[in-house]
Length: 67
Image (cartoon, rainbow, N blue to C red; front, side):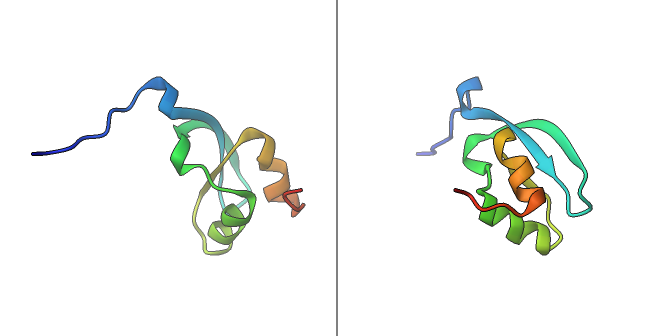
């Protein structure tokens, strides 16, 4: 028996891709792959692109807290 995940448009969320260089780009990603502000900062420090909600993009870049 095999199990597969069903992906629907409801599975995706609008986001912003943030690169370690500071470049940003609007995108759409699976909602479960969205990063929190804190996890995005850790990824960027490690040289890995992060996907965050549109409203979190500035906080990730500017170093503001999540609250």
